[in-house]
Amino acid sequence: MAPSWSVAGIERHTQEETHRPAMDSTARLIGDSGHLGWIRLIHVCSSWRSVGLSMASLWGYVFPIFPDDHISETILALSRDQPLSLDMDLAAHMQPFFYSPPEMVKFFTLAEKHLSRARILTFPRHLNRNVQFWDPSIMRDVHLPHLKILRLYVVRESVQHEFTIQAPALTHLVLGYFAPFAIVPSLTYLKITDEVTRYRPVTSLLDMLRATPLLEELSMQWVHPSRELPSDMTVASVRLPKLSTARFSGPPISLMLVKHLELPRDADLTFWAGNDPVLGQSIWPILDVLDMFSREPSINYMSLRPDLCVDICLATSREPGDVPAPRISLRTVSTTLGEELGESHTDPRATARFLSELISHMEPANITTFHVSPYTMNMFGSSVSEEDLIDSHIAILHCLTGLKTLSVGWLPTRYKPFFVALARPKAIALEPFELGTLIIFSEDSLSGYDFHPYTPELLVPAVEGVRRRWNDISIMLENRCNAGKHLKHLVLEGLRVDEDEFGRINAEGLRRVAAFVDEVVDRRLSTTMNSAEQK
Image (cartoon, helix red, strand yellow):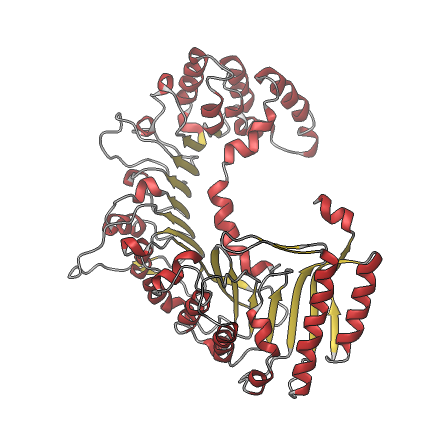
């Protein structure tokens, strides 16, 4: 129910957190046993040579799939002297289910003998006591000319002293613990997880970043807050001139590290802020840090997706028709926003206030397109009237003086305050912008269902939801025409059901709204109720 640009930053962050590279790519090759997988692999490889692929190189990549000492030796022979993948995530998950401890020891011993050939090297968490020797200390005094990807998820007592790895080609590094010895100037990708940032002073993290001038992609995670810098302490900024993408996840006090970074203005930044007012972890200070990025003049797209989490995206589209490029994606937990404002956590104005505060840190006149997804307002126990609530959203719209396009996600029973604001006759006359296009995202097959612990569930059949949607759109467009603010374009996106009563309601709805706009553009894809229910 939203354009792709509005969710790209958060979805990319979510996918990265759940992705297990070795397990995702190789687990299905095993089958019922290692030998069955080996037979399958031989069958597949018989066709590789015919399409011009390097057999030796491909054998080097599949080395860690079969931690059987006999098969591993065969693969090494077939790979000749090509670089190897020593991505041990899969092997760590497999033992002791497929192979006995002696077999695993032989496999890891064999891998260590060929460590200098590693192109990908992983030290996973899930290794039992039989393979304790597989830890970063084996890299000491070993030249790794082919190593490009290194993932360090575990530290053992054998790593007593820091050392510098000899990996001139290393570009991708994932740190699961504090390991300055792995930081090399050639890095272009760096991911630092919670085990690294836990209670670490900001200065130590900045020193790690300062040593990576070629960095293009950065991901940093905190669960526990980092140590604050003394108020009288001055820290030199860290320049990352080549950075294109960065993701920061953790308590707001930890995300404040960003103020010590000099980043390109066109970088794609994602902030996943966990706010806890009880511990003083307020979300509001992070908006001050974002100020230097959110005021970028090229930002002309904005989106709001309020639900259990509030997602906001600011994006740039330099030319008409271009796909907007995300610049800032921000997520925070919605239930604590009201508490930070001194109101009940059910206060329906909390999201509007949060958005208003963000807008005060922007150049709102530059926003030409605004997308907002629907969300459920819990009015139970609130002294706020719906009229006051709509007024707060009207005030937000009136800050966007350059607004040309409003995009709205539509779900039955979900609240759409910005859409309602466009239909208020008194507000229409005071609009400081010239709105020309309204985009509606919808799916005809969806029924309306909401559940809250304080209010009963609401259920609207799908066909009734379609009828109500057309009725609301028609009333809004007619009100704007009567106020002299008719829209030029109505654009429909999503899925359309054409069968039976759905088709009749859609046809009638299109005829009604066509009288109030210059053009109706229906981009919805046709589907059926049966196919939609099977998805």
